[in-house]
Length: 425
Image 1 (cartoon, rainbow, N blue to C red):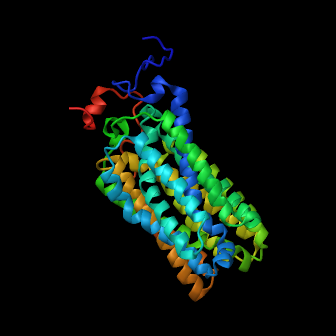
Image 2 (image 1 turned 120 degrees about the vertical axis):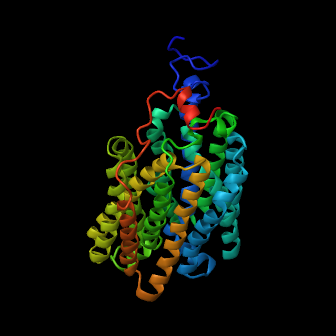
Image 3 (image 1 turned 90 degrees about the vertical axis):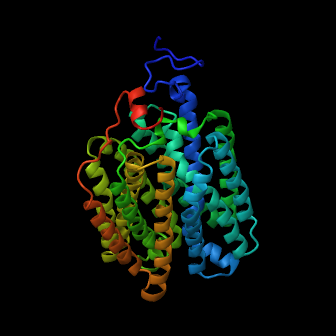
């Protein structure tokens, strides 16, 4: 065929034999669908971490301790840990358009319930319901997005979708913090509910209704059970270290670094911007130097958290260290998700679900550990504890053999590739 596009099917030289890749038939629809999926990711991650910037506001409004508000993050992440793998397994044959729309509808409704919460326990219950939806959404989002495009652009698609989660740190949490300080903590939940509903409408219009197993992204390009196990162990340690510090960063900046509470949102915005830089740069780096893209972010995280503890009382230095932490975590998220889709020993949906579970186990463990450290040793010690966990994660990453099978996705992905990966008989 010629190289123009029509709505009837792919008209350029295909990277898949079936023409099922949406981008080959409707490139604008595929791009818009990725934006909508990314918007959903933005909403979920902002909601998950919103209490971090509103600790004092929620605490005063609902008459609970700061540590109790921190547990809103712990409980949310814990639900994702428990629910990710079993729920993803149960829904693995549900067409992605129907499933994603149901998850976003749940998100919109439960955020309205959070905004209406008359008590702490109501708010906790609403967040648990939101977390159930996120457990599945986060497990399938990367595979769903990658399946819309030819395999050769996998890393860029992952960066585009998962980067929206980092944008939640760049824009969502700081803006939600500011909005909550100005108009009350309930307002950000209402705004997020509306944004989630908009994403739902776009997904309903754009995402194909197809069997998930038909996607070329359904299996890893270089399955390796040992590498996958090391990956999830490192994920738990790195995320525990990050969130031991990050969950209580507002208290750290005000109590230890001497910043005014009004400076917290701008600092989070600056740090989030650095996280976006990490997201944007990791895709190209992973294609050329996968080992550096894997080790570098974890090393940066460990060093930055240690430096944050050392220079805690110097405001500008603390801000710079937090910016480096965000740069590292932004890079780590993209590198990690791409590695999951490479080394997944079976279904990438299920592998992503377990990776998401361990990712959130780290978030839950970190917020819990941070609360214990805060109560016993003071908020400054959260940075040192985080550095120790991140350092352990670095040791695990370094123990992985050099090289990454399947890191370079073939430019052409034909019938032989699908047969080798078990997608066709």
